[in-house]
View (cartoon, helix red, strand yellow):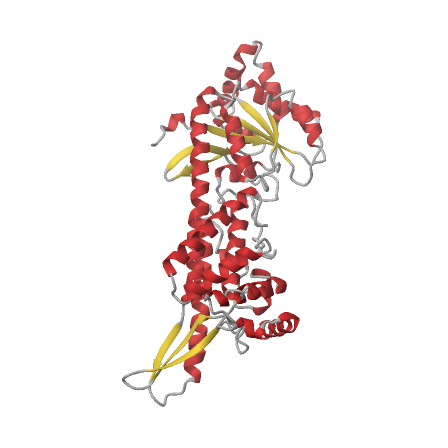
Length: 475
């Protein structure tokens, strides 16, 4: 279904310079191409930002320059009108009379889309006090006769939100506090539903917009889960191999294969991140790898393993959980040479002494994520293979990093332009039952036991954890 252009709700976001108008446009339009700058007056001309899903425009946000000469404009309007019923016509007369007047350029840019039928979103900064000098611009907006609401955007603090609420209530029927940088998904949808009550013509289109956006959100989480699941499976099963002639030196080939192995998985992670960002409409993240500083936060940096995977305590619990599976046929152990899960964990971790041994091995060998395999080749020579990973923590690391990235992206509004920080431990919320379940799933996938079934089980868990983000879980 495609709506006709004339039935699409449009909202002009107006107010003084540097009050967060562009931030609100970016958040509600979910468009990170909206120009946002700390410098006042960064928006020089009116610009339209349609909110589109699968080619259908649901509504449109209009970013406008800041109002700067409101008192002068209001004085002109009052001088040219003596009838309250014709105030909107007087505003049109002002626009016609000053269309080419540079003195009122910004006011004309802001008022023109309103007089063409857009609703009004008036934006103020709740961290600065209310002042009577704002009343001129609010009165001008009232003269337009268009449906309107006021948003208090607390840029630096909420110190004056109550004061603004009282002042704005004299001019606007609807006043809401809306932090463009922190408004969660549900609050954005609630605001759209509120818009629908301002004009009967908007109610049905915006009801549909909310329904489409809710379905799109569910799809974003579902597709993110599949992408993350594919990445984890790739990390569990990938190996780099090379045939070498008999007598040829192995050392140079091993060095190349180790680099190839790391590059492949590092690239797979970056690709997964880009795809998740695109699902959430982050198409202007100027090389997300630079924003995420992956060079300093490399997947294979041993010091980051506990940050992105399990904490040291959780790693030991995961190993213990894996050890409990030995009797059930999983055959998992810590290999004292590599710190990987290879078989016989119960013989290593027995009581406190075993736990201390495991801790030393994990710390010492966490960077040895894969093992070498040398096979004979029928035509002569050998084949060297590096991987797949047998390390206990490695799939938790990959999954934890990916879930933390998904959470950061899905909770981020398009008004935020800071570097995405991924610093919190990623899997603190995993309980012992989940660790045991994951250990079994990872081991089965790694060893190609019921691989399709276990991949589906992993996808189901990931989908639930991705959805939980909107419920405040998985912090």
